[in-house]
Amino acid sequence: MNLERRRFVGQVCKTALTIVGGYVVAMNTARAAEEEEGEGGIGPIEDLMREHGVLRRVLMIYEEGLRRIAAHQDFPGNPFLTGAHVTRGLA
Image (cartoon, rainbow, N blue to C red; front, side, top):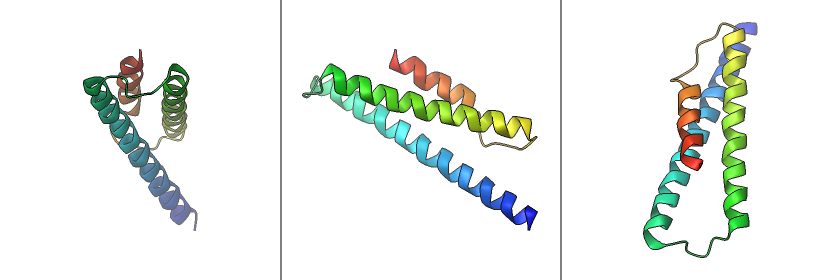
């Protein structure tokens, strides 16, 4: 039963990482499209809220990566490098 639970948690984490990764790609695509069109009516407060949301998600990914390292588990890709690239793009 413990092995089934670990598999389930592993699948949930992989799914969460996939969803967050997709969200980050969508945000980058949307941001690139907005830069081509101009600001498109997004104010500074909305922009700050979006960046804050992305940063919270990146921190959640970091926490999960650290948890997996401490538990000697594998994790897909390199979430630390990807998170660094995302935060560098926000600046």
